[in-house]
Image 1: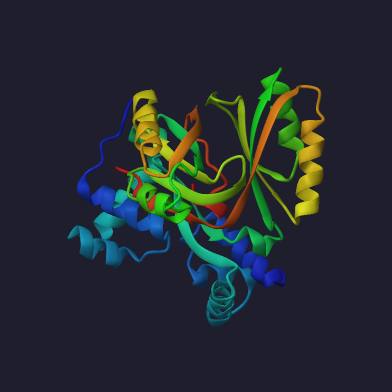
Image 2: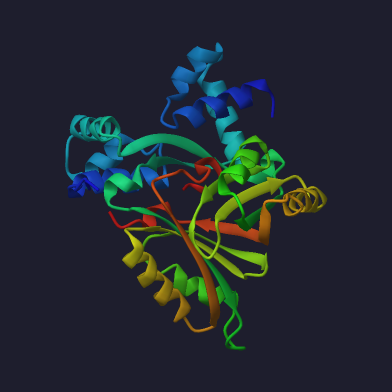
Amino acid sequence: MVTKLLDDSEKTIILNLLVNARTRYNKIADQCQLSVSRVIQKHKQMQEDGIITGSTLIQDPRKDGKNIIASFNIDVTRISSLMKIFEKMEEILFYTHTMGRYDIYAIAACENLEKMNTLIIEIKNLAIVKNFVTNIWAGQYMMLPENIEL
Amino acid sequence: MDALDKKIKESLNENARLSFRKIAEMTGKSTDTIINRYNKMEKSGYIKGSTITLDRFKLGFEGTAVYQIISGSRKNITNEDIIDEILKLPNVLLVGKTIGVHDILVLAAVKGLIHFEELFIKIIMLPGVMDVDSCYWTGSKDVCPQYFSL
């Protein structure tokens, strides 16, 4: 693995943008003690280097009708088969093959508990599923993107 | 939310740094209208903020870990107390309470298997933690950044 070592100003740019991608360049420039044009240049360079891969708004899933969020931990007889099924399920927000206690970790979102139950039963009933553990997310979750040690 | 709100959200989900002036040009509306709509969506909770996405792998983080905690080893320690301690750990990127087999969910960026194990030990040693189920995946796959900033 080739690790890109960031200088202090690059770290400041990233940490500011992780908290608010719309942070004004002049605010970051003040913190870095660099000119605005230098900050813009460094930001662009990190995008070109593929360190910063994009930006997005952060939205409340409940406002999109995704009122119930759940984590799924699943053991299967054939990992790729479940991954293919998940690819087509719009309720599945994220899924990945994992190492450790379970084969697959997934995050799903549904409009209500009834629909989440239906989804859980549908997955549990798949012949390839050996073990299925669900946790429903309770209330608000805390996001700490700036907690990353650069 | 009407079509204009959706267009503003879509544009900023593609590039959160897009200027309101540019969105105004794209939609044929005034910049003031776009700013008002954005502020309304923010005020009503549709928009919680914005963030950038990173290729964490390029920054030395080989993967992402999930720690699912079963609490209850001490009666006088609440889940909130455990979460307060978890928030002090570097590289923890998301924390939330869950209902099900596990009580607390933690997602963290990890530099490798040794780091994954170190963080596991730190979490399982926290007062009030009874058990931790963990798993890990390599690479820098985004975990639905528009909802989880991750």
